[in-house]
Amino acid sequence: MADQAFVTLATNDNYARGAMVLGKSLHNHKTAKKLVALIGPQVSGPCQAVLKMIFDEVRLVNVLDSGDTAHLAMIKRPDLGITFTKLHCWALTHYSKCVFMDADTLVVSNIDELFDREELSAAPDPGWPDCFNSGVFVFCPSLETYGKLLQYCTEHGSFDGGDQGVLNGYFNTWATADISKHLPFIYNLSSIAIYTYLPAFKQYGSNAKVVHFLGQTKPWSYTFDPKERKIQGNMQEASSHPTFLLEWWTLYSSTVVPMLHEQYGDQPFNSGCVEMKTDYAAQEALSSEERKKKWEQGQADYMGMDSFENIQKKLDAFLK
Ligand code: UDP
Ligand code: MN
Image (cartoon, rainbow, N blue to C red):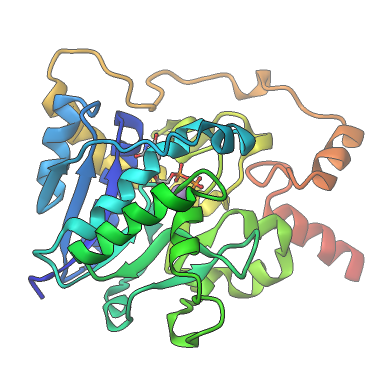
């Protein structure tokens, strides 16, 4: 339907790369809906051009800052003030219904059925399940709601300094009023769930429809070797399932990077892909004591030593 759209937001080139991958993943899973990207003025010309190729509509919005810097500092994420721009999605009144998706999400299956849901439908937040996570939500654009949301912000601020606090404050009956507004967790599977409840992840993770790379370390924080299909970076911090991270990078390097190259021409730009082979052997191995400590802190090396294959092997050996 022409009056229904997926909407995302990017205020800089990094999040724009995320938005490009998200848009591509929606197309790959054959969405019949329109795609809209809200962007800030800091997104560069070449990135805007690529976004325009992937999205039906690219709309420049003014960044509203919550101004609530004390709250933001408290959760050590000053950059989240920008997500107030998200509220602008309610002003997209040429659509009757939309699904907002963070630029750090990846679609791994068609999710057009989400448009059968009503405002405000969202999945529980893994940190506080009586709050919804605002990385994926169904909403109905309306200038009336937009005005009320802005008014709510001015009067009450945000308890977490970001859009999730505002939206949970405003849609405050979500947890109890109507179970049909609770999206299954597989529509917003955050990497955090992997180490907080590994058995559940192993049982249900393959049903994932949307993966959310929530937290400080985003897919674009790593570098990727397309030839070796290897991801590099601080693997102790790798907060996401290796397969999903690899899927993001494969899509990015095979479809988005060529479009960026075309736009940048001879101008150099950092695609995040390594051109030269690197010496993996030189990468430090952790002692088993250090590894145990990392495990206990929930920072297993899922990309390497603690991959599921290795864990499985170990379990099999025990059972024998
Ligand atoms: N965002 C953005 N620029 C920023 C920070 C955030 O455009 O500097 C947008 C982007 O769509 C992002 C969303 O706001 O996905 C929410 O922020 P983020 O995903 O970083 O928060 P998290 O999901 O990790 O809590
Ligand atoms: Mn996010």
